[in-house]
Image (tube, rainbow over all chains, first blue to last red; front, side, top):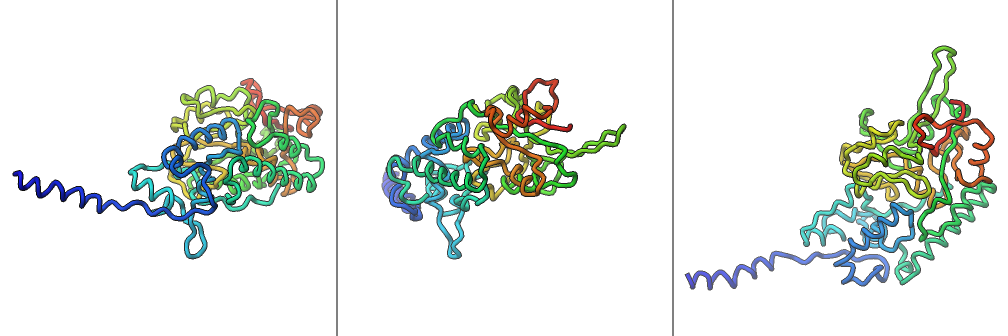
Length: 122
Length: 250
């Protein structure tokens, strides 16, 4: 028994860890995020939730932490120059949330690609 | 977002100035449109207030039977693509044709959320998802809507729709999704930029000018001046909802 455990215990974690690949996060446009990266990794949803309530209920449009803002910088383009949905496999939001085993609801309602330029009509 | 908007403090100012610039251009295009000027008075980072109450005037004598420019514009603006199931497809604005059987008089008018001052949808909402913004626009916060549809039953104008199916390709300015209720937002994303709702713009472009958008509180504005002079009614005045949409000739 001792021999068996001795054989298995050091072996198992090494195998498990080796299979978990850290997310490969696609590069973003722009030089700097709205907050330092380590803060955004932990608190981005709190920021967004706070600002979304201000936006939806009070009409404050100039919010610092908006989902649309994330998408504007972090959505990647494919070979044809078309934006790839940010929640597609291996894209910015999805790659990390798969790693963290978190399901996102955002994109059942929200656009997952940047908005086209504002229409010119008044 | 351009990279320059990342640094501290600049995003707010930049987006305000960018929009202020657009506002100036609009003023040049349409002198006399006080709406633009007024909306620009609010900074992007300030909450809306009851200083304004946005409303609509529908002149049914100018609304053409058979024209659905406002409906198409709304569908286009908000990405309300139909599933070809008329009974359940989302509909934020619809054309209603009326006929007086005795006299034979016919009229056509658009019907949408009336943005009531005392909205029954808000009264019945169990979660606070249905709410009225300070400036009078009645909205659904879909983050907290549980899809119970009490508001749909409470609305005397049948103005609200429920989304039954998964959606894709939503517009950035108009998030919509399965399991929530939605209705006319008075194009709140445009109003906040000092622009007019898509239906009003489409009606003007179609040459009918049956819809006038403006601030009911601005006594010098076109909407308030028109309503002060012309006879107009709210729909279902018996309910004392004080709607922000007023109709003439109904």
